Length: 506
Image (cartoon, rainbow, N blue to C red):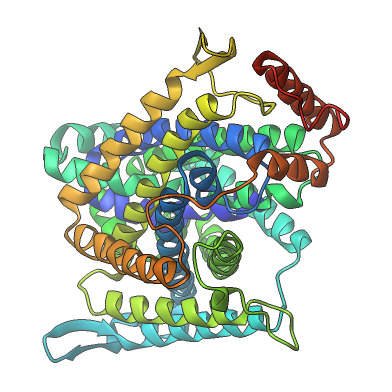
């Protein structure tokens, strides 16, 4: 439910954006992006269960590709987590604004023109900034939402989403409306690709499970079971929402209500809409608030990990003397989130702008994750893998006699994510400008930092990954995997004709 509270929230943001872009072909856009997401999920499942360490994609890239790639992946994830703060805070307050008409207030009244910027909604902007500042204050003080609360809200949301889909199909769905929009309102190729690339944000958030792997007991068992259940639940719901939605309402209405699409859809279910609409809006605001908090915690946890591996300055891992929290990271990236939020509100469509950047950071990081998955199969064939992605080809490496499992699905997944990334760059004007600019700024900082500290820029600092893996497995209480790993290292050293430092410890 912790994972679902993060990933499951994405449909509240993506539904209106994707349907507004892909129009009558929205179910197809969700389905194609979902297939790529399934492969991403399987890759994360293998890596998180094999290397149960906080850091997610940044750690896998560091481990498999070296310091420079690890920093690149970390930079992309920092963009994602920071956009996470802005996007989900904006979406959360958007769902709260669903209730404004009940008080005789319309959000449009607060839209003003500021110089060359038109229809800037000051009320929505202020609400969002207050939420971001509040979450930053909470996290500096070390007050976090309990895991139990995440479980309860996640379960309630899962039941609500399943209920909307089920009763929507039973009471209101008109297949002729769906087919009419598919036939007569199918988008142009460019417009469909735009919607397809946005659909990937429906499935972003698997990092939350990999980030939690280090805090999970027996991750070899728990992580695969959790991830696989989450992957297919979210995929089914995302495709179902778009299918039932276009069978109840024309796509134009979702575009108008892209700030609260799930609540708007729920309010149009006969007999139940009067209750389901407000409840879905409240639940959407709540679960998006939790996801926004995930961004705040994700930024601080990720930058702390990068500081530990000397990819960024220790300043970012500074711990508050009273509250014992990484206050510099929380406040610093909180300010970045506020700036990005303000800039997004100056654009014609705030949620679309933030989703552009979100898709850029996610797909860039996922490409590096797939490369790391493939590279680690060759570089580290000795680590036990409690779960392997399907479709593997065995290859006997002659120089040491090791059997390498070549992940065919890893190559297919990389091609799929690369296609989405290319589509983001081609069709998202803001994404192709701000995304690369973010990476360039981060790279400039990295070069200066590494040179000042007399560390290589494009090469990696020496690291004892074998000892690191032993410490990780010991901390995770994966004693069976630990013994298998030590024995594999001993056998490798015997074949090389050298005394193994792990023989007495195996």
